[in-house]
Image (cartoon, rainbow, N blue to C red; front, side, top):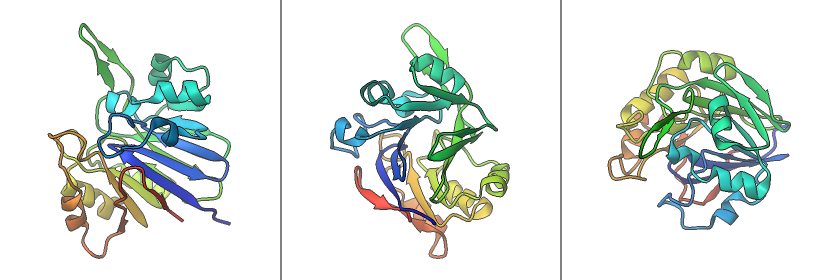
Length: 234
């Protein structure tokens, strides 16, 4: 039996998934996201897990505050877990699959970088990754993280067959809208897609229009919620 899964987008790549047995925040860049005018307290209420795709600040975001306030388990790459210093961690790497109780997480390849830049030095934070979240009783969800298109996306489809895609479209640092649409059309059979990583900073594309236009009328359903709006995936 498939149970309901709700999704909330806060801006950039930050999403919340609510489903039976878990409240999951992915890449919770929340308080600095201009698309969301609510509170961090509301966004993280009931959080059981924080998942991170890589170590850039616009993805780590409010992770430390959230795990300190909620005791949520941190699921991320080994280096990111060590950097954040959480007590409750579940580290992994590309190719791994982790049991998180109400769901599993599989780490996938992503073509990007990962680290933090300070005034005097840079901190290497391991491989950038994508994440496939599979609830025990819900649709599988592929959060691509930050990435360009790559041919082994076909293997992600073959291995995991994700039903929902969370797809970066903002260009410059990730795929642009037209390339992101090509990735969805060529490699995946998504029922629904959520475009992310746009509109947060002036140097990114400001709307998902290029992505929506390139997908065309026969593509998967494109989700365009407002920041903080909760929608149903199933």
